[in-house]
Amino acid sequence: MPSLEKKFVSAMLALIRERRKKSPINGDDISGIRTSAVVPAKIREAKFSDFEGVATLKHCWGLAPDSPENWKRLWQHNPASRYMGSEQPIGWVLEADGKIVGYLGNIPQLYRYGGKTLTAVTAHGLVVDPSYRALSASLVAAYFHQKSVDLYISTTAIEAVGKIARAFKSDPLPQAEYHTVLFWVIRPYSFSRSLMMKLGLNTVLRTLCSGFLSVAIAVEKIFERRWPRKSPSRVSVNETNVDGIDREFDDLWLQKVGEEQRLLADRTSETLKWHFGIPSDRGDTSVLRCSVNGKLLGYAVVRHEPEDQTTGLKKSSIDDMLIANDDREVVGALILAAYRCARKAGSHTLEVMGFPQNLRAVFRSGHPYSRQYPACPYHYKAADPALHQQLSKADQWYATPFDGDASLIRPSYPSSPPRVTLREQMEFDRNQVAEDVAVSERTEVV
Image 1 (spheres, rainbow, N blue to C red):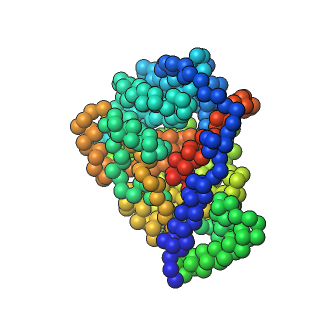
Image 2 (image 1 turned 120 degrees about the horizontal axis):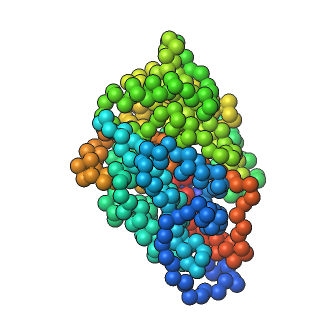
Image 3 (image 1 turned 45 degrees about the vertical axis):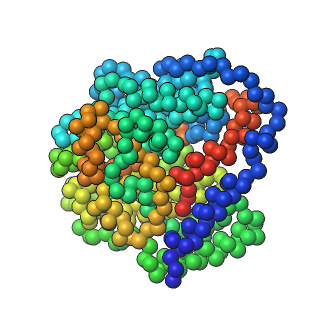
């Protein structure tokens, strides 16, 4: 049987992208907007009082909702901020005539490497009004010119932003296959229907194609055994939530940092709770604890996204996993538990991204499908050239969605959405197609 992964899925992706390119919405379709002289913009450090202006800019250009509570979480309640002592900027804004027209966030984080604690900053949420896009590099320059920082990280960069980062001597992550996402289809019909909705087919075609595709996926799933393998009896996995993260996680963390020299984002229990404790979160997070004889030997954090209002897709993803000595049996048990957890949550797919090759080999034993980002979304730069050279080796990394802001940032809904003027909404509509094409290359369902 021809592989759906290589044939049908690639054909669907091509159709999705082609339909977006042919969308009738473009600059010529929006009337009533007069071009005027661009007011000069100045860059400055962001302040908490800038929240409303930044939220409005994000909303206008389709970025995830944010809330004042989330800003407090990211900077006032951040465990890394206490460690770093001197206050790091929360970000930078471009301001023109009192209006915020550009923004780049700056999130402090801690890493461990070779027995040392490294200070890191993560770039977050770069957004610039089209009239001021030429000044985007000034925001990135301010980020890379920070002092008292060991490591600069960007984990959600689209290809264009990655090019800017490389201009500042930032390199793509050397860890192999980080940009390859592995995924299992849990509910073939629901998954197929959401894919047909994404294609914009009419009701009749959507029903017919969904039925055909779901049967094909279900049959191939049986023949190819596309699901995680059964776990050994010696291990037990229990499900809890973020509040269930306790001191046993600290013991596991201390053991892990002593095993070998690899760059690891800080995973103390305090940091884990901070990282996954998103205010006004409409999704759900499950924490899976794997124990042997009552001792915690590994955990996985599974994120269940809310249903996509456009396509109806509901997906789960493994946002982090840490295992003592990378025990293959513990890895396998957690993958199977994550699959069952996602199925219980009603998700159509389960995704996993990143992790070193030895862990990915266990993931692949369940014969998942795969898809790729067009370019690596993870870039790094070490302030010390010697450290940067050390980190150019793949075996020095344990990169997962826990790094940077890949799982740290989720939609956080304020009590009332930011006000957007008619002009701003029309400008957003006029430019939406170009923005969607860029973003969609790293967020496709399949």
